[in-house]
Length: 413
Image 1 (cartoon, rainbow, N blue to C red):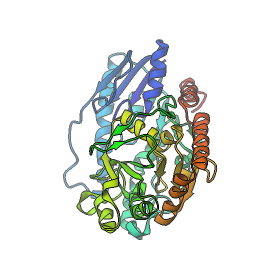
Image 2: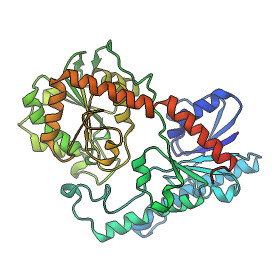
Image 3: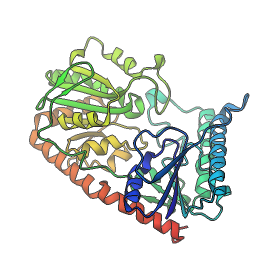
Image 4: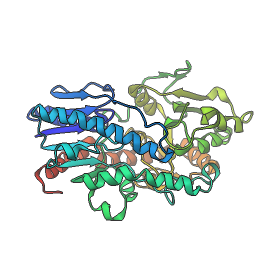
């Protein structure tokens, strides 16, 4: 096949598919994106970067800024695609992540080429993530709700333009309008269960602050891309005093950037971490709480393999790969009883679930796993078994490739 992959941060979610296709050495694989690749591109894959020709329109209505940005990106990507077409490239299939607008006008370049879109999330002002946290979000203002609904212009345009769609989890599909869900397949990108695997002989790890983390220490891990309320940083930080009271020798290791947010509103002073640490000041031992910032992937995995218990909390939103990677290493999990987590963590079977908003429940569940190591081991083994069965590369990549063949052939349209 001749396949065009479109992703702002190429290869993004297509990394495993690209490796599998490139290894077959029979396909013509081309990528389009704005940013420089963040990882090596497989041999045989051609990657073309394009740039934006303009910035946002001066004076545009603030609700239009998001769509204006996507329009600009879509135009730039279509211009690059037209150059490819004029040079003789005719794909059999286009795989595109439409989240930033790049894929908006690809139908105008290749009207008959099947388009498989990677759909992540459909915005809703009520009943999902936007009004989930009364303390920090409050009652949504009608203007905020209107702005959020308007953000669905790009997803709706892409649903209409796509031959078929794919999304990683059942929860993510459930956020889309009912009339579109039958045209969205659920296939995860896949977890490398050979890399993210238990390692009883994991070596000690020196944290960025110089602390040596040794095997066998009661280590509690908490991982976000950025430390923010969407991923439960407030509940976790508020649980630290009780966690330390019960287990004063435990190491608490928090991974993730501390400035800015990936999702939701920015913090006063730019750091949600500092907002909530101020709440518990004087009631916890900071010498045993370690904020590492972002870690290289290999270091992150080594940390998971040394951990005794992993905590994952999230609003009803996109499920983080880090949870599945932690499960794949055989870590016992304490997760929030929110729909994306409940899809993979079954209470008492593959982990423990707690009320997202309850630091006391969280401390109690973590304490249970640190104390009852037989239970922790059992939950960790079952968590890894679930990932092997449903989310491993060996399970997911063949399903992704089969879906691509179906869409390219016109069997799904």
